[in-house]
Length: 205
Ligand SMILES: O=C(O)[C@H](O)COP(=O)(O)O
Image (cartoon, rainbow, N blue to C red; front, top):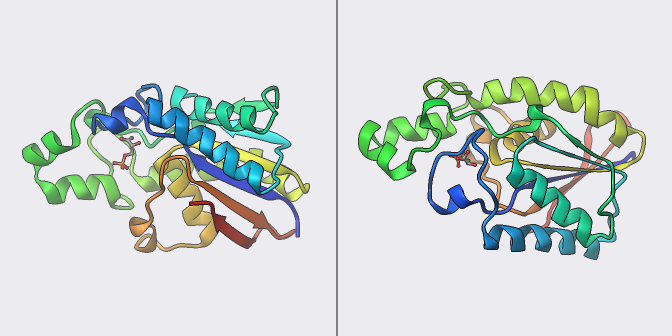
């Protein structure tokens, strides 16, 4: 057995609440989002976890979620690396649009394909496959080595950047990943084997 990798999707954002496509836009957490992030910290504390290093995106909602978790563990000053590679999938021209308005304009089916297909990007944006093509190399080069060195690593990021990572970690097919939804502020705790495969996965729902 080697180290521990904890993935957390940010708490509810202002645009989650308003039902807007967000992508690389940068809304803050809502009051509920702040509470969800703090609760994630409490759940991790209850499991006796302490982090050695944290990673997050360059977007406010993920950074604040990361900080709430670290504050809750008494680790406010922990080394935290921010990288664009962990950003949400870029929603391109859909960014800022209301999801129901988009369904009214382009149809339920087309919007579902943009949101949940594996390799069909929204206009001007990234598919889940495109997102994985930047998240996975970053994981391999920058994050995995810490876990394999036996450390406990936090990654506070986004629904689709984490779905792309989970697809690779769990060995899911492009069909299987479509059904996987990540709740806001729900920690997913992986223990990895020394050969980098997954020893166990625990969703702290
Ligand atoms: O970027 C967004 O709008 C959300 O964070 C995730 O959106 P989705 O549920 O459409 O993938």
